[in-house]
Image (cartoon, rainbow, N blue to C red):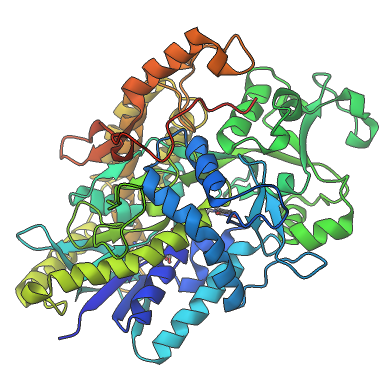
Amino acid sequence: MAERYIVVGGGLAGLATVIKLAEAGKHVDVFSIVPVKRSHSVCAQGGINGAVNTKGEGDSPDVHVKDTLRGGDFLAEQPPVKGMCYAAPGIIYLLDRMGVPFSRTPEGLLDFRRFGGTMAHRTAFAGASTGQQLLYALDEQVRRYEAEGLVRKFEYWEFLGAIKDEQEVCRGIVALDVRTMNIEAFPADAVMLATGGPGIVYGRSTNSLINTGTAAARTYQDGAIYANAEFVQVHPTAIPGQDKHRLMSESARGEGGRVWVPRKKGDTRETKDIPESERWYFLEERYPKYRNLVPRDVATREIFSVCRDDGMGLDGGDAVYLDVSHIPAATLDKKLGGIMEIYEKFQGVDPRHHPMKIFPAVHYSMGGLWVDYEADAKGDLIKDSPRQQMTNIQGLYASGECDYAYHGANRLGANSLVSCIYAGFISGPAMISYAKNKASSKAGGDAPSGLLESAKKQWQEKFAAIGKMSGSENPYQIGHDMGELMIKAATVVKKNSELDVALVKIKEMKERWHKVSALDTGRTLNQAISYTNQLWNMLELADLMLKASRLRDECRGSHYKPEFNLPTPKTHDPTQDPEWMAAWKKRNDTWLKASMGRWSASGPNVTFEPLRSLQTETPILKPEPRWYG
Ligand SMILES: Cc1cc2nc3c(=O)[nH]c(=O)nc-3n(C[C@H](O)[C@H](O)[C@H](O)COP(=O)(O)OP(=O)(O)OC[C@H]3O[C@@H](n4cnc5c(N)ncnc54)[C@H](O)[C@@H]3O)c2cc1C
C-alpha cells in the first residue's frame, strides 16, 4: 500500500511540506482549523530574508548566518541556521518564479530592504503584504496537486492529538470537524505539525485568534519535548488595541522610519511644532551604527524603559512616535501601503503626515517543539536524513513557528518566513525517508484499526465530558485572566518574585478549569467546547513558559531579568574589557543551553542542555559578545 502523510497546518511551513511530499508523488492529507489561505502567515507584512547582495554591500549567506546566530545570542543550533541561510536566496528566486509579485527596483530587479540586526539590504518584500503573496503562491501550487488527486484538504478540522502505538511511534492523528463536531482518527506513516505560534496564551498580541499554540501544547503533554519556552518576542512597534495589537512592521524603520519622543517630559505640542533639536531619537543616539534597526529585543527594551523607567512616553504614558512622515507619501504608498492603511483605519490618523503612536506587543515565539537534525562535520545538514525536523516522538515532525530550531533567544525580522519555508522543504524529504526506512514493517499508514478506534473513542469521551461540565467558571474569563497574568509576568522585563506569584496563579487557573461550565450544548459549531479543550492546553503551555522563565537566571535575547544583567562594559568594544569578558564567559558556561520542557502531571519538568552544535571542536561560529552599540 502507498504511504500516507499528514500535514497539520496550512501556513507557509505546512504548505511547503505538502509541496515537497506531493512533488515526490506522495499522498498527503492537510488539516487546518481555518481555510489554508486564512492561516496566520497571511498577516506577515515586511518581507523574507535572503542574502543575495544585489546592492553590492558584501552580503552573503555566511554573513546571514552570523547575523542570525548573533541575533539569537547563540542559542540556535547552528547547522539548521546554516542550511536556512544558504537556501534563502534560492527560495526567494523560486517564489519569484512561482509568481509572487515582489516589489522591484526601477530597473526591474527584485528590491531588498533593510531589517533589524543586519547592515545589509537582505529582505525581499511585496509591499507590506509579503505573507499574503507568499501564502497564495504556495496555495496555488498545492491546488495543482489537489487537482491531481495527491492532496486532500481538511479545512475547518482541528487537530486534537497524535496517535501513538505501544512503541511510542506516531501512527496518525485524531481531529475534530469544527462544523459538525464529528471526531475522526486518521492514519499516517509520518505526521507534520506546522501549527504556528502561541500568541493567544498572552491574550492580546499581534497574532491571529487561531494562534493558540494548542496543537504543540497537546503534543507536549503527549511526550514531545518543548524547548526554549521562555523565549517569546515582544515586537517594538505595534498599535495597542483592546481586542488585539496591530503590528506596524519593522519595514517602516527599514524604509527610514524614526522612533522618537519629545526631549521635554510632558511636552504637549503638536509634533509639527516640535523642532528637530527638541526631539529625542533615542535609538539613533544610543546605537549610532544600527540606529532604528537594532534587533527587536533591544529596541523593545529601550522603548519600554523610555516610557516606564524615564517617564518620557507620550503624555506620560505607554507610547512613543514611529515617524515616517518625512518620507514622500507616494513612496510610502508604494512600499508600505498595507500598514499605512492599517494605521489609518484603526487610529483614524494618516501616518503619511502624522507620526504614529506605538508601543511594544507580544509577537512571536522562538521556543517550540524540540526537533532533531543530522549534519556532517562541516555543519551541513545531511540531505534527506529522516532526522531533520523530527520531534523526539518517532514519526512526528514539526516545522515553522511551532518548532524551536532557528532563532535562539531572539528572532531577526523577516527570518521567520524563510525559516518556515526552508523547514517545510527539508521536512518533506525527511518524512519520506523515514516512511521508506520503516516500510518493511509498518508502511501504508496501516495503523491497526483498534489503535485508531480507541484513540477516537478517548477524544469523543473527553469532548462529551467537557460538554457536560456545569461548574461556575466561564472558560473565556479564565483565558482572559491567563493572558493578563502572562503579560504582567513574562514579557519585556521578568522578575523572579512576579514569576513565583504567576506560577501559583496558573495552578489556580488550572483548578478553576475543572469547574467550568460548558456554556453551549449545541451539537454543531460548538466553539465553547472546542475553546475549553484548547484552554487546558494553553494553561499547560503557560505553566511551562513561566517555569522556564523562572529557572533561567540570566539575560539573553527576549528573556530579560535586570538583576542578572551583565555589567556595562568599560570600553566601547566589550571584548577589550577583560572583566566584562570574564562575566560574559561565566554566564555562557551556565546558561548557553536550551531549556527542555517535559510534561508531567505534577507540573513542567525543565532541564537545561548544552547545544549539540557547540560541543564540536569547530562550530560554524564560536559564540561572541552580542553588541550593537
Ligand atoms: C502581524 C505579523 C506580521 C509578521 N510579518 C513577518 C514578516 O514580514 N516576515 C517574517 O519573516 N515573519 C513575519 N511574521 C511572523 C510570521 O508571519 C510567522 O511566524 C509565520 O507566518 C508562521 O508560519 P507557520 O507556517 O509556522 O504558521 P501559520 O501561518 O500560523 O499557520 C499555522 C497553521 O496551522 C493551523 N492550525 C493551528 N492549530 C491547529 C489545530 N489545532 N488543528 C488544525 N490546524 C491548526 C492553522 O489553521 C494554520 O493553517 C509576522 C507575524 C505577525 C503576527
